[in-house]
Image (cartoon, rainbow, N blue to C red):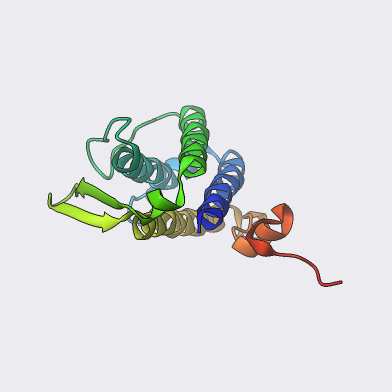
Length: 175
């Protein structure tokens, strides 16, 4: 099971590198424009992805600070946000690498943010949500980018492409 989460941590970082590389090509006005997405702009969506990751990493590790709100703008400047994203992806990969099978079978206790409630949940399903949340909002960012630079210029985030490029996920070519 751990190898699955290591793959998802790698996939997460791979997607984020592709996403930020494409976002770096657009104008600041396009990057910040309210396009009707849940977090309004590409800027708001990328910040939310980092907010969500920091909330969950605090729950998982007890380290770090919890952002003030789900729509917090943690970094106003793109390059600072990109550097923070890379750093967070490294922290995520290191955390996953340290997990044991007994950790994955353990229970996570945390308090929710929006409507505070105490929760107890096995760690593995919490990790499933953690990585799925990233995929969900990265999909929104992908749609925003596609509307700005077009489908042909927007990189694919398909998991199978990551697996083909890295060999993760048990992918191999038959003899």
